[in-house]
Length: 143
Length: 431
Image 1: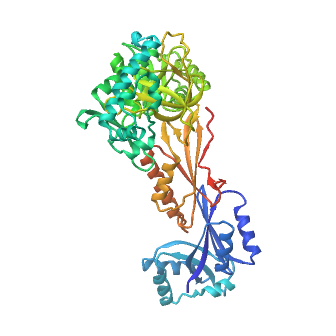
Image 2: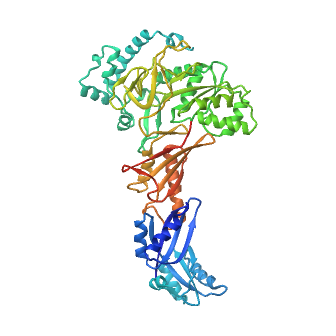
Image 3: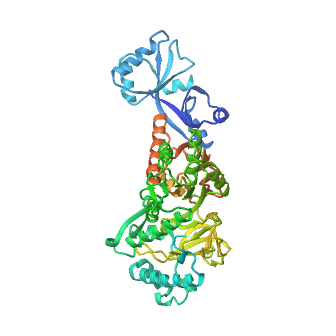
């Protein structure tokens, strides 16, 4: 139920993101979701792509510092308070969220949110118990 | 002139004096320092083979690595019970290089510095503000004891705390300021900004050293502080500050030749070069008891001049240090080797760190930026962890070198490689 996310170290200088997306484009890799965390000096780009293994390979070859991180893709009801339900469940169980970001596309009528948590297996069983739907990796890559 | 009988001694007589002291030093190290005894044996040399001053050339060189190899006290020529002080500079692999002094050494050093302060027009009644760092670094305590020896009043304020420096300078009526030239420029600028008039104040001279500077900086300092700015030179291995000092003619630094014998050599061949030639400075100490060194290679590039100086001193003069034969940098008066930064990166587990030291001068203060390429091993998906890494590196560098550096994490292959060897330093300072 884990989704492989590509994380890339980016210096804050112009053109880096353009180069990176070009590399992915040339390899026929589609970006499903992305987010950037940044400081004044550098940023970390997080990507969900159509083919993580291939993305890792081509980005490394292009000289980027890349890693793969396990995240979970959670279906959240697209209505007021939808996200709060999920967050509350995680909080009650003492699961720390490192970061989260949303998909633009949807798999259904629900919104899709990527979570990076410290205790990923605990989070998965907790979400299952609470009948919150979590998408499989291959389903996410195909979106 | 504080010691005219020595400072203006005819050169022939001076050389005789040097030779007598040299012979004693050679005997001393041969008897007491196994490192030197072995070096002599390798060369098939005995102390008695030293027949004339020119035989200095026969003696072995000493290099900084020898100091490291004999850490901490292996090169001391006096028993520890006779040592009354040690100083040290940060090492390249975590261990510092250590030097020691007997009471006679401290007394001699104080005499030299007293001479230096007198050369800058100082004497009894002067107020000397010592803004060099106190501690293991030789700058602060060196100037301190010498100024006291001369009979001046010392303000042992040490480095930093600019506001207080300016306050005491005004309130205590400082007449002579001792610090790095870049810090003096900074003080001048801060004084202007805070409406403190130093130009018409009591301060009349500055004794500046511990880092390279230029005639342009001299002009700026003399104008900005309303003083005469003097260049002082030294290195802890040889003694500390006061190995040489400018007189009022400001035409090169007189080497205290009754304590040290200078030479200029070709850094590649080790061959001694004549006066007037540019090369590596080499010193032999001829009075020191605890830590005598034979033909110590300073890695500093300079020129020696023997023409008589208008001040009447006969001591040979050395020109401003023009560069280094190694990759040492001087940042805010602190000696920094790129290999020290490398050792910090190795410690955090990097096997082949790629890094670059970028040095710049902003508002008269040196800035050190350390660029580090983020390897996969260092990389984390979380900002917090990368920031922790920056903090750790900053902290380790500060504790090793005693200066702060800004860490900049950069992408792989950002740092230029030339001929397979990475360039380690970009120095943007214009002195």
